[in-house]
Image 1: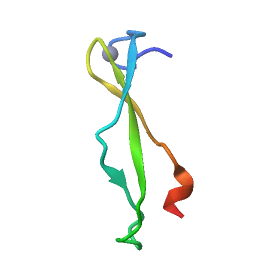
Image 2 (image 1 turned 135 degrees about the horizontal axis):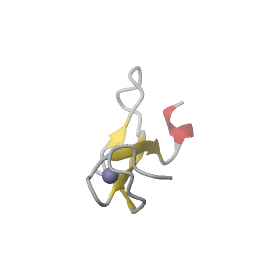
Image 3 (image 1 turned 60 degrees about the vertical axis):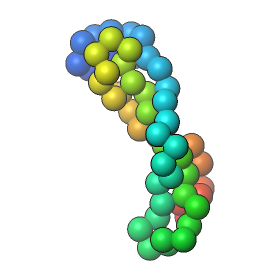
Length: 56
Ligand SMILES: [Zn+2]
């Protein structure tokens, strides 16, 4: 995998500890997001949810 912005290949995974929650369940716990960030330019390559099943 290479960065689509600068073609670098160093990445770090990071989270903002803010849970993504389902729109229709405001009380739902949700799941933290994991960002894959380019170490060279800061481009966010992908955002994943740690526990997709928690959005059900
Ligand atoms: Zn980059």
